[in-house]
Image (tube, rainbow, N blue to C red; front, side, top):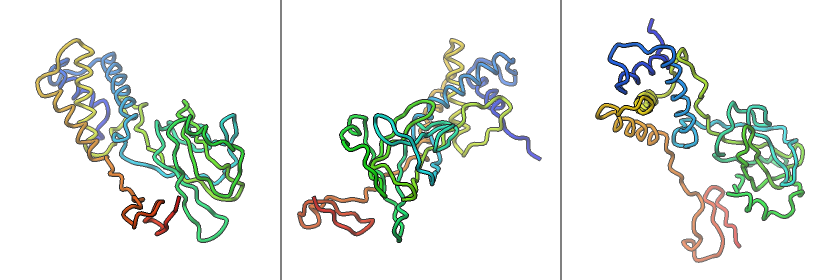
Length: 253
């Protein structure tokens, strides 16, 4: 039976690579806690980069009895939110409104606004409808707010929210290192660089380079190419509007 590989094992390797400890020389408790603190900080920093995240989880919100404030109708996203996640994501991947009033049911993508200024351009915040069109993600901490317009009527549909699953930052030395391929090297080598800096030394030759390359490989594996589904109507005879290939529908201006 194989012994689980833990973050403590990764810390030992990182200390040896950093040059702080000689090969086979174990770290003491204070050094172990210091390394865990540095490792948690590194993962926390990387969690703000979507290419560091290896999976996206859909959440279906069936109860749309949300909240209302000065800026309109919203749902909370976080550990105690209407959309419950362990850590509130730094960004919203995408979301859609599933219309349930008239079959066949359709998933209508929420058009994201990029700023509060854009959201404020929606004047009739109190309008209600069976269908929602627009969304704005307020990155409040520790619970974010997902604003939706128009305000969905009860029973009119469901909200599908796709969120990045952030890597946990509450690991300890005893926690099993259970992440996809490429994460182990990226963690160990980047932690080695941090430990060297923390102890006022330069990491051995090649460690910096491997740290950068391993992180680039990891992010390249996670990267997704956005395929545009709506095309410039000029290629369709010069009409004004937008053609949607997903529904084979032309929307004129």
